[in-house]
Image 1: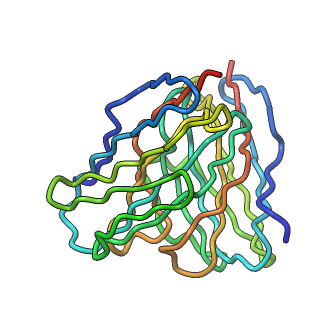
Image 2 (image 1 turned 60 degrees about the vertical axis):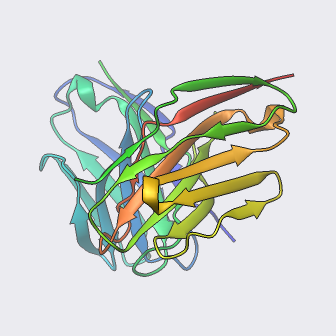
Length: 113
Length: 115
């Protein structure tokens, strides 16, 4: 069974640039959620995709956008990067409409200079 | 408002000591789910337990045990006979009714177990 994989693991960008983070969900999972974890904080929910449709969004501006593909992998795009976007971005997959366990990847650590 | 509070920022114990991590939650929903996740230095969050709001039975899994008390809105986690490998950040989280996949996390408690 393949777990959740994310890429890249680390990246550095400058203010104003755009970034795309990728996530491959665990085999058999059709739901992907993205979380932002600032240093020393708990993860914050960004949004969730279920069968290629956005299915819930947290308190993040529109410059945070996402996609889910037919194979249930997903992308998180952030435009016009700001210094405060520096964080660990975690992807989690699950099967169906939740309440069960979320399986997390190891995250993509983004540094914005 | 939905909120999870982990008042202990950091805890340091010596191996073999017992340690309890506190979690207090707020929600007006009658149906909700509570979780504990472990985050080792590698970064991924590892699921430990899920508890629904209608099941107040305490649970034990090896050296881990959880005490869920609706009367005090608490869901505390105890590690018995701690080991160095238990060193990690532990997060308590809440999913209110209907919010599929949207975990509301606490700030986390960093546990350091010294040999």
